[in-house]
Length: 379
Image (cartoon, rainbow, N blue to C red; front, side, top):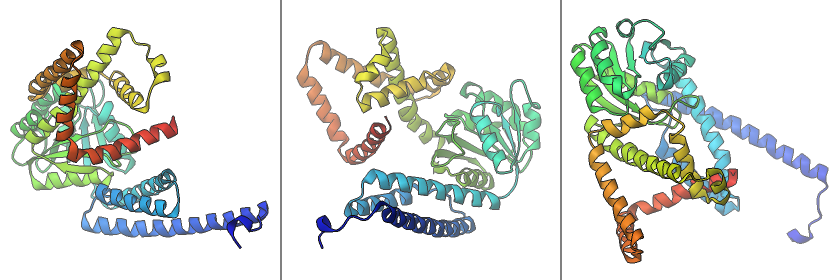
């Protein structure tokens, strides 16, 4: 009998069949979580991180292809497995946190911002954490002398000075690390101010103080002194879900000139232009494409935060002046073309940049499509 002539089942029967399928799904989910715990045990035994971006991305691609073959909407499968992957990662992190070594952590600047967030995350897993700030806690030297891992979580402008102040107090066998978005000068200051018996690691969490922990976030690690301290810090971040990337301090700062200085300067210029125009941003959103909404959201995000943070990012990176000058030149190039209605110059430069980015375009298209699809779906 063809599908078109098959008798329609009554609602009660359909609901019973749906309930049976749902029960089967729950059973399969329980089996899947059991396998995840075996994976967590293996990772704990072999010192592997809880998050593997490449593995997760490849698996999702396979699942989306199978969804297409089965006639299922990709967004449904993506949502279901995003939730499953998140639950799996959380289960792995909790297991790994139960099996890691215990040591004390002192966070200088740990009463607000990223320092306070790190303190909350570590305490949630049972770490002994001491924090100190401008108006509370013991002195920074006392905190540095009393803990196994000493974290500098102070503003960029103060990091070098604080490192020099507390470095001599860090006890032998302990580790001193920072979480600043620049690495050359803070790392040098930590090395110079501490004795050879103290390990030193430069770190840069590439995210802000939000979320449950460090799940799927990137952290750059720069070696300073001591293998034991570096291994401890790397494992600590990975146990809470971070993806760690090793780099020299010089490479880190050069990359931050692209990722932070150039992008933040561009975003701040956009915000400055909007302010000069006194643009009605609320009204503009009614006309907005998803791309504009995303861009405007990033502008608003920056200007909802501390001006001092972005001033330090733009002025304290040694590469900032060179990149800012090139940015100004290119902006002027396009501005002159617009002023002269020089369509051909715009087309020529556009094509030159397109050629440069052609190998990058496939990833960029896939990534931006996913972002825009999500924005459209969720309004």
